[in-house]
Length: 235
Image (cartoon, rainbow, N blue to C red; front, side, top):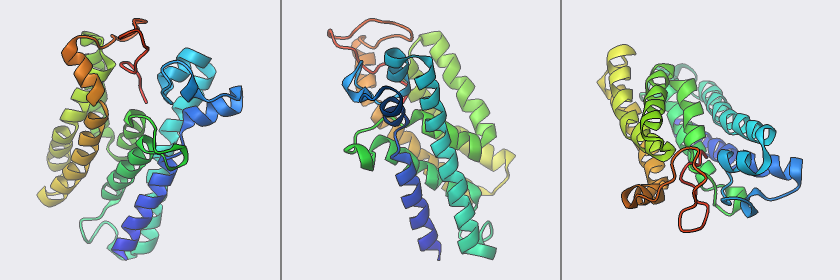
């Protein structure tokens, strides 16, 4: 039953993650494909640039909500299927299910089944999962991200460094504050590490532009190589 639970969690989360809020919102409100406008990224920032605050707000709510919904649905199903074993055996608890759900929601957002496996970078979805599953770590990682962006003016750098410290903070919070024990803290940290590596990998083009000094700073309208890039996209 454990394998069935994990498979259901993965499938439901991936399918929900594959729903791209920017594409859906722009299609319903403007009858256009956002991937044909601006930076051509189906993300929050491009929606704001091209269509204004209302579509961007709806996109933000949608991207945050799908991660939360996936996590809650997965946890509820796990409780039903595992019964007494939930939170007591196999190191499976609500956070374990939540992290697995989050990982597959992010995979769905990045490689959406419905849109040719071309989506966003998964930052907003990962934030929503973190808020639901681990609010203490959220309250450490998000201010860290904000401080990096405030100092450097690079959203991408903030995202990359926040993803890098996310597993470290997770281990210390779970081991010392939640007191879940070393095995479960390491399991949670391992799942978080998978998410972090995926987020960093999706910022590989941003890393290259940071190295080259061509990355746009937050709020800049500058174009790299004459083409609008996704350097300050939050997706």
